[in-house]
Image 1 (cartoon, helix red, strand yellow):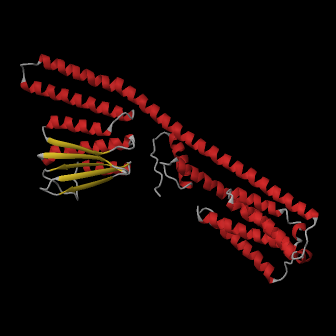
Image 2 (image 1 turned 90 degrees about the vertical axis):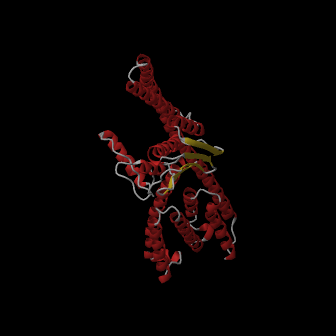
Image 3 (image 1 turned 45 degrees about the vertical axis):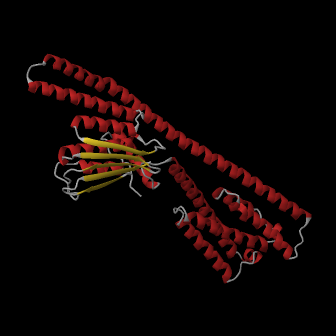
Length: 425
């Protein structure tokens, strides 16, 4: 599992908060990009471990009482707990209780071992009840405790059957031992059965309510977090649009005014003003595109096709765009941005370094991924190294890693280049 990575901000209060979050994530073996299901599963596991630990301490109390029974001759004879077999059973129970405690943290083994050892405890309890008088035994009330423990630890209908069967098995063995139940014992049996069903209903019902309420709280926290992110994005989009957008618009207007003043004058000056205006127009288009992504109002296919068209007109290169498949689910803004930046980098590198005659851009929407392919017939390059100061390919791989995607670079000197970028839906 990846270690949670939360960067430091330099602010002591924020760093303390990050340290607390990091500590909780490490303790629960979770990552920073935690989902609602993962949070709920972690809570369920921690709750089970806490209850299973309480079972261990209860076992220690029973083992202490058991040792006292073994030490007092009259009590040990009453329950027929004499000889080496009784002490062997006692130490076996002690050993499996300790073994159970040691594996509690394991999500799967902890539950299985706890259930098996609890069933072993139940069988020992049935034996003691039978030896102590069956339905007249003073230990019969212990059966209600086992029903409670099973219902708390394993609140599923089938998982709670063993303690109910234990009561019926005790009654049947009483009959086999020629202990005919009296009317009072029949009433006792019915009374215990009724108490068992009441305990099971109350505990299972409360458990379902608790789990449902916790899941709702987790989902509500996730929804509130997403709403806060959306509201902050919209606020930033408004501020950027009204501030930087207005400044770029003013720059375009001023460059157009300068063009009208410099007409039929210095050619070099005219060229500089034209380039200034083109850069400002490209910047404001980039700004609008980013604002649409921030507001999640960005169509990936249309956006990439428009950029290819603009780049084709600016560079006069033959660039063909092909779109396939059907978009079944909207990509997250960071994944759309990653696809767009990779396309920008590919076209920019091809125009600057490859001297291609043609470039083919293919965008395909699949069931499980969105795939972008950019192929040119230019000079190509070595893929096993990068020049100092050139970070385009490194940035592509980092973007792919950040969104869980994959970049495949296929090129060789004189054979053009093809870059394939895939992100999961």
